[in-house]
Image 1 (cartoon, one colour):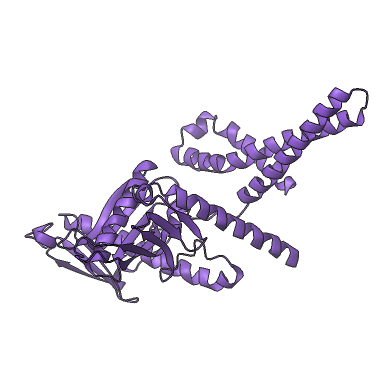
Image 2 (cartoon, helix red, strand yellow):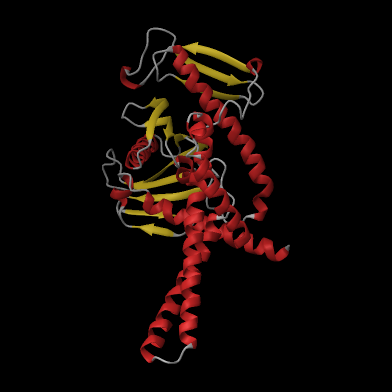
Length: 361
């Protein structure tokens, strides 16, 4: 492991020199590529250097302990040794995590699709709550959101809404949100005060680049129609809405959010491309799923992942047994309280798998 770290440090220093070269800074694409590699290596190199310092502190403490000439110095060295060993243990675990294979999609933007499930109008209203939660979370993290398509109900809910989230680390954090979200609350229309349970399904897709997935135009059937919406909203007199059918898979994508037919087609293609790439990735993931015991981050949309209980102000993530009694904060975008533990659990599972894999090898 530490031979690799030394090599990473040398590469980091090499990149540092190259990024100061005027010839590199003048080449924007090259500079961006090298800066991305530099930024990726920086956390690992910083931890490695801290590890080396802690090792030096430990060696110094051990030398002082071997010298019995001063009791006060002996006590100081013993404390230094204890702190150095604790720091080494902590840094070793952190470095192991940083050395885990990186998800190639982590730096990508994402497309989030929310659909009302069981519960009729209440499920549609819950879908709107989830959209608001993710929008506020994106805003908190400095990400941008853009609605791609929306199908509203008369009461302001969403039968379906899809939107783009753009920003650094969007996929690395939102990928844990795919699955069935369940809500338990008393609907406003419920006269008896009974708690109803309804669901919404969330799908999080990494945005696919055109170079990653080529789609043959012959495989597409593109239809135009007039936009429509609840209560007369988003209705156009021209046929600007777009429906694209991918003939080989039968997948249908609609977009009617924009008044421009061209913009709707562009958005629909972005969604279609990401959905098709997601299917290919799932085939690959399913092939190796038996090697992973953890269900965290699998993105299985049939899996009930979280419950939002209004009467108890409780949020429970069923994958890791996490319960938080701050429902309002979570719904107002404080999702890191849930996502951070999910990331930790996923990393722990990967570390366990890597250790067992090493033992079997």
